[in-house]
Length: 414
Image (cartoon, rainbow, N blue to C red; front, side, top):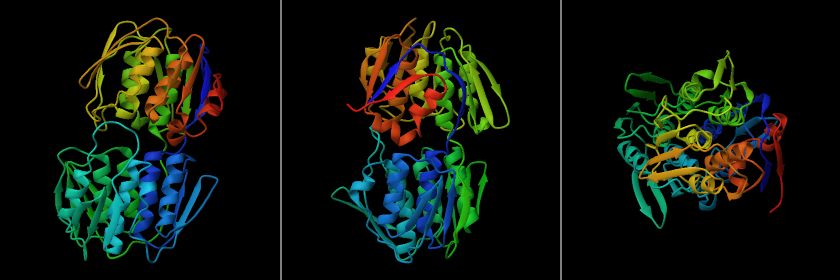
């Protein structure tokens, strides 16, 4: 449980960790080769620990120290992923493509993770079938096998991050070229493509597609994980909601333009440097309308923290969630803290209030938890936030970093 005494203006600098959503597919890329893969700037998070535990269970050796992850070995991999690990987080499903590509078969349970509404894996399975795998679903697990994968052209109805990553991982060991039309272009996907290129499977991007040239085997690589744009955005919003001044260091500004634009419209002063972004929040933000959208649009992972900011805005904000059908786990707890929010379908209408109040609330997923932390920082009185294990999945040293900015935050046992 996290206890927060609100009302403090956050000020100072915070160093941004490596991106969780870039580290996870990079770890699973290690399944494509027995050669050493060295990953730097890897954040110490529960989700990353799950990924490490999973590749170990599949036959890899791993050493992790001071943010450097070394993965090697696994001439023969176990083709069956432990269901308990896969069901902890959705990204674990990405082991399916590498296992089929290298071992010729795989058994992977349907994924778990945050409860954000229906997120079918149809795009993943359709794509692997197009590459020549026989795919069947039995008793909550996907069984796939193929003598070899054959590159082909695959069209995605929606630019799914997970499906694009799955097909790049599988296509790296497929015969010939694999072309994904309408791919996701999130920075984390581009980063995976860069890593696969370094490992020996060249990837190039064209206007409406990404193309990977498969090869018979991949080599090792040494690669540094990009900064976490969602963590950076969360701390910038923490500065804005408290009327403070916060600078996110070791960040990538070009990944944050959609947020910078909305913060500016909300009345915040934003400065940008080569590897930092600084925000100074207004006394009270202005209402802002936005919709979530695949990159470079406004990221769905920042929708809940942004809603927390707009809960204190002057006026009415309308937010349309287009990526996840049920990403509203933060709404009910924010109502308990005095926010005025209505949900109709995939649209939230936020009527700003002058003050939020401390309350005892429960985080239901990573980003909902972040929204509650931000609301608590600005609220009057003390808030108790349960479900903090969700926050540990996505934010490295959250309480410590907030305290360094002047927040009064304590981690307590329930």
